[in-house]
Length: 213
Image (cartoon, rainbow, N blue to C red; front, side, top):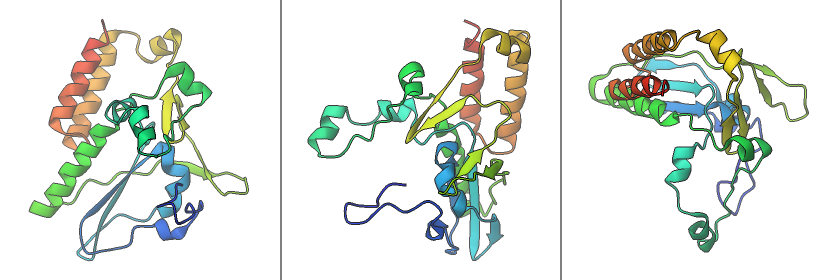
């Protein structure tokens, strides 16, 4: 974790004080996989009581920083002029593959929509299972993330993805048509369950269609 300001030390891993407490207002916490090792201690049950309207969503494969957020930030020279450390992730994987383009913004959009629906209409946000984790045996007590098909890796605060080879892709999706069918079915399900907005669902389908080219 990073210091809140220059006058305090960084919050140590496992600090229970980072847990969001009930506040009597709707709260949705969105946590990327890249930050999960530092924030798993803040996990707590979802709630729909008037005193505690809370949801936590953990997004597998997502990093705190993706290429879109990099594109929208000030350039390195301007950051340096402001006297702020760049904090650029600079690991071997990012140098080889670049910063991930995982669209975390889609899940933020749905979270904002669900928060608005809770505030204006009293509609409870959907619930989601957390990422499956297991504790490591190291001295920091951090967590190891278990994914069946891991191709996402993290180099704080960003991340990168190592593309599957052609044989792996063909094994998963023998034809482009089958790929599209599976993508479209999953997108429709996520839109129906309100984990994606309708407009972002259309964008994902269009992106899948373009992957043929």
